[in-house]
Length: 274
Image (cartoon, rainbow, N blue to C red; front, side, top):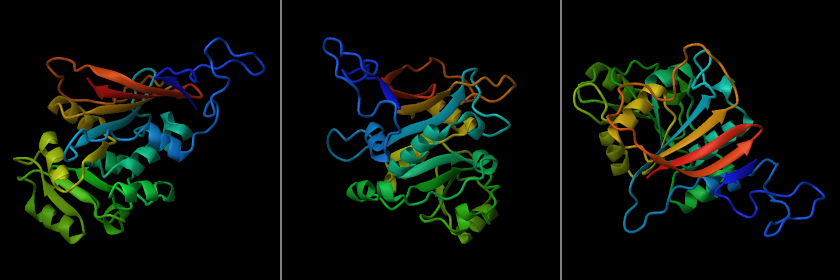
């Protein structure tokens, strides 16, 4: 893996055996090798609060093919790679909570987040628990409550829903061990209210892994702070979803490139709200 942006004197290196050009450092210790999880954690660290209490910061992590597909045969794994999965694990290792849509839980066969020794000291120093909570966004609570996500999580799974959600399903989710959080009027979840509800629970380092419908709602609500996007060097054609779907925003929101990594033709970008 190598860093393409921000550009430093280590970003571009001379070929092996060649003399360094003026102002260039010979070799980057992290170029063309697998970065450690600690190095990835530093590269993807959440912003430190400028003053006072930590405000919520919501980042998304998605993968897209060259022709804009977020999935192939209904899943993201076929357009992913080992480095993408290491970043996926790193982002989870840094988060307090992971927001995910109910349909994605079903399609991707979600399991509970696990404790990772590589992040244990970092999480303890940040006052975090051993693993992030999975926060499932669902209006109807049509969830398989016998899945390990609900029956054996290291950290209790959260279910974010609206005040109008079916009360029998709410009761069943709570009986299964989930913590139900009301984050909207009617049956739907208001993304802004969901972010605030999680922050009120002390969860301010937030990550969403989609799917496209949930990410579209988050974008439309204007509460996304950061987009972590893996661009896969693959073409899929077909009619797969984009990384975000739903109503368009009135004016496209501009994000700024904060970092760009590359490995085996895959690009890993971080874009932050301007």
